[in-house]
Image (cartoon, rainbow, N blue to C red; front, side, top):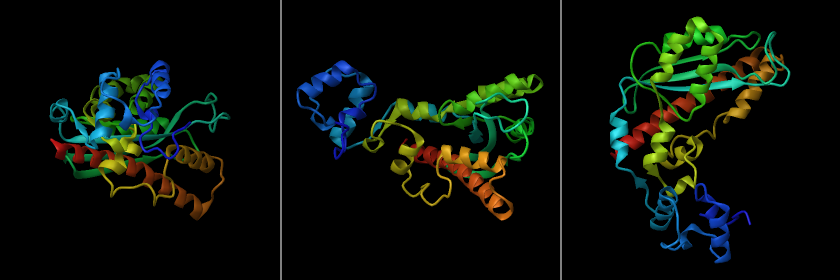
Length: 269
């Protein structure tokens, strides 16, 4: 039912409607490889089918154009946040999403890193103002700010609403942002993506040498929990310092992954 043991189940077809799923199931088709050419699919759905059936990636005509439109030097940005039912700090509502750290890799051209900047908040106080001021300093100047998805823009917009005196600079940052996931979604697909262009799925396919497996903190939920435990005093002394290091390592890996992903796609064009 859930495709266990099937490499490319029809569940991998993006936005597959109930009606189309039922039509395929009634015909006994559960593998993408078996979907006939005459079956009605959208352009994006047909692209996934073609890639799986030919075992070759799709490279769109717009990939070169969109990569060339980036303004150098580029900055690759990633945030981590914490959100708790019981607020960690005074004067904060339940479930407020608080940015706690960021990582920035700066590159002069694809894959050429010229600097790395990072920030991790003091877990024992609300550091949003300090984080915002550091972010504006670290991202000052020109050049595209590359993110993966819409999360970073949402975080920066929330900071702009919170600090009206800094909102102009923060809005300028969002105007420089390029969503790299949109570029990938529109212009590149590999059978190994298995229906999603999330960075955790795209990275091992395009950059197999870069992995999260050896990190103590390897996903956003774990990072959120680790910071919350630091704020609650769950860790002390050397253990707390190790957790902070692990948080920095994880966030740094996220932006390094973006750098390597961009470099690999640039090689294709």
